[in-house]
Image (cartoon, rainbow, N blue to C red; front, side, top):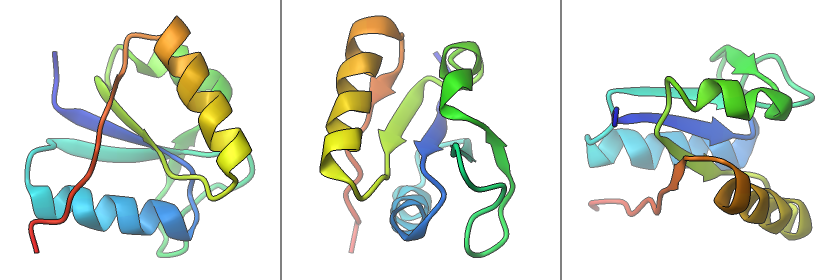
Length: 95
């Protein structure tokens, strides 16, 4: 199992998630997927869409849903738990 993290969402929440993940210093690679954006607010490239999650599970073992809408977030979490091999991570700032 690799230590790569996939962040679902490419907005402000994803920036916070990425910053905390970097501070934790336990992920080798961090990337983003989003259905509407091609890059994050600070210019990081989005590597795919939510429909690509199954294929991306080969390269990414860890995932976090960084979407503000709680209904969409919970729906995606449920789908991932039931259908995909990702480990849904909890991020906690070391500060």
